[in-house]
Amino acid sequence: MSKRVGRKIYRTNRGNRKKMVRSVFKFLFIAIILAVLIFVGYSVAKTVVNYLKNNDVSTSENDKPWTPPIFEDNTGEDVPTDNPAEKDNTDNKETNTGEEKNFDVRFSAYKLPITALASTDALTAALNSAKEGGYTAVIAVLKDKGGKIYYKTASEMAKSDENAVVGELYAGQICSMIKAAGFTPIAQVNILEDNNRYGEKRDGSYHIAGESTWLDDSVANGGKPWLSPFDTLTQSYAAFLSNEVSSSGFEYVIFDGITFPAFRNSDLGLIGGAVQSADRYKGLVNIANIAANAAVQNNSSAITMLSAGDIISGTSEAFKPNELSSDIIGVSYILSELGNTAVINGEEIAIADLTAYEKAETVFGEIKRLAGEGKTIIPAIRQSEFSQADFSDTISAIMSLGFDSYIIL
Image 1: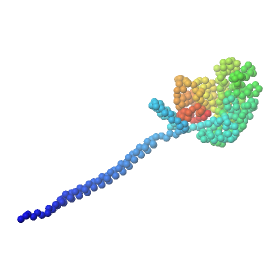
Image 2: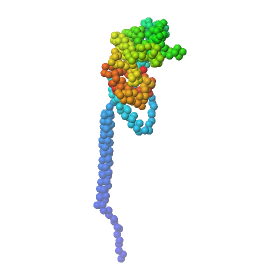
Image 3: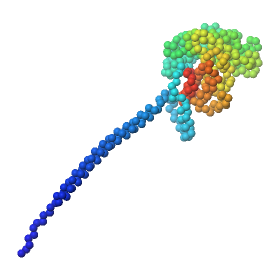
Image 4: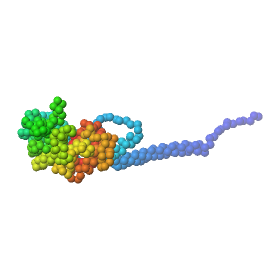
């Protein structure tokens, strides 16, 4: 009898299945928790990082002082340098230029071109240009080097040379237009660099051998007469023009051309003792004081204009601060007139090797020292001799020395 074999039945272990299900759910739960933690952690971390980052930037910006620019450099020229030492010097120069200071400038004056006084239209156009430049004062040259007079003067001596007076406007008319445009009016009058031929006897000029007029060169070479500070007619002429201009309303009057011609040794003998004397400088100081005193009587401030190059070289005969009656000395700063070296406070300095900032700081620092406490110095800068960057550094230097006004020639 054969043995019956039944069907085999396989049963799943219920315990294992439950264990597997629990493992799957546990895995999913952990994955979800991790995802939540990662998401929350990233959000929190991002917020913290952004806060710290923004806080650092804000702190840095608040600590950095605002630097007002004095002049904008519009040259657009980038000067490359491969020398680290040169870069360091540039950085040091910028740190010491005083550009981070706020300066209280009494006035910044712009010298009008001679053509501006040709008519009211020309003057209006020139004044509009000065406004665009941001200046607060303008200078009208009423008598220029050479002797030309650019306003209608009542001086009989001036009118004795038919070519001397070329102006079509009155001094008062010029001054009124300047004031109406919102500027401080400043007049400029050249005193001695005058080559006009006044009268039949060249009145006011240097004379030799009695009545002959001295000329600064031969007739064939175009020699010209000069006004002499020792001549009484010159002195009266200076007083008249100063009174006429200052009474027209100009707040300041600049008197320049207070110098002697470049006499040759033979000239000194021909002209005589007045120009040979060691005290001849007193003639220049006297004529400067005559002009200044006449202006002050009309409540104008007189500015005696002298050369920076002559002052620091010791050749300015009129630079006698204690003897000049004017409280203000204008100093024309013209690079071509500065020597290569100068003795500054007893020490010889190589002026030519200095940067624009250092040069202005050195020259005007010395002039300020020489002038003493009783005089106000106003720098007058010939801008055309500078690059824009050097001009900006020059203005920064004179402002850092405490000067509150300057003139642009």
